[in-house]
Length: 81
Image 1 (cartoon, rainbow, N blue to C red):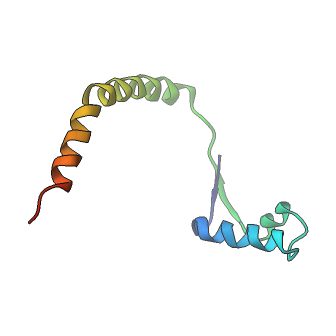
Image 2: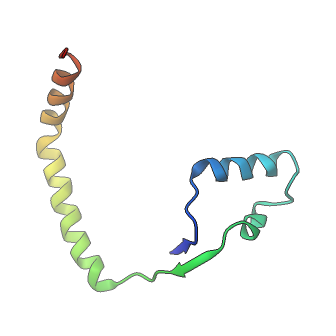
Image 3: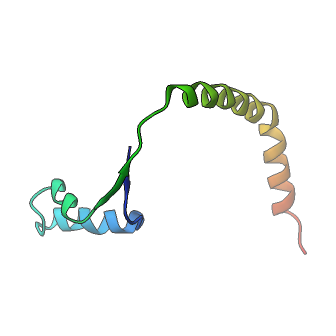
């Protein structure tokens, strides 16, 4: 995974893609002139095992509380302050 020097946001990419669409840029590969890479992060197999376990717990937690989250949201939307 590459980490850019600056994280500008989606609108930056949208503007670039519009520029490609109108012929301002020849191809999407020209984005490399705009984006400078700060560092490269390599996956850690050890961390992956931890995240995989936590992800399963998170998925189970979400399934167990999904209806309660919707109920809470509906209740809050219907309240006036």
